[in-house]
Length: 172
Image (cartoon, rainbow, N blue to C red; front, side):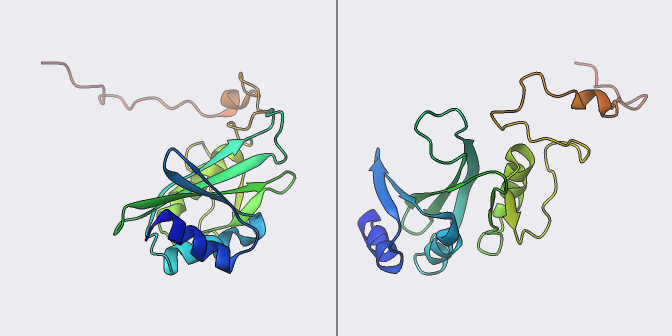
């Protein structure tokens, strides 16, 4: 299947999508309300069987940005080598999208990472908890409004030291 055929199939099923290409990469922007259905169609009907990346962009200080957060899903069809980037947008005070762990198991840790660092909630996620930062950390440090020096959280975290006798081996 080609990018044009994928776009045609998606546009027949969904009226509210925006398509573009950049440097040969196929991209689609969809509303938050239909993102799960679009991703499900890409997975189940169009054979995009590999979730290569799931990340977030904070558009807080972008001059023309209409939305606060952009979620970016990069998918691949391992049979045809076709790739597509799906983007959707969410806003404060409740930035949330449906979890896609039921479509790609790899989304499990990727969604946890986005939750941990940006605070985007994934509804229906089987285990949405911190993966990078300690459980006691209250903020989401990759948000643009998070101070560069932090908010003093690191002073409240326990100090982790090496166990005695477990130093790094000597170089030989």
